[in-house]
Length: 116
Image (tube, rainbow, N blue to C red; front, top):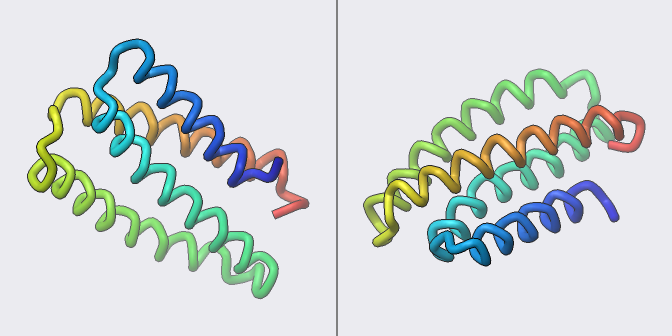
């Protein structure tokens, strides 16, 4: 299984466990969707930049960081104001998935440096 597939499988599995344990489904899903989507986009962008112009990776990652800050600010605002989600459950799920997905992404980048 490739890295994006592994990240997706682990995130879906973890969300299934959380929902089975009684966490509200919508909050778990939306708490997972943003961080996972952003990590997958980052993975594909890094893969493309490393293949085309590896010297540009740092500049691209700095720009991606700024874009992700804006994205996550908007995402959380829309989830908490636009959808009728339980704020505590969403924030707990979002935080857990944000940390988990980005730790997994960093680990996969590290072990797969030669394969990115």
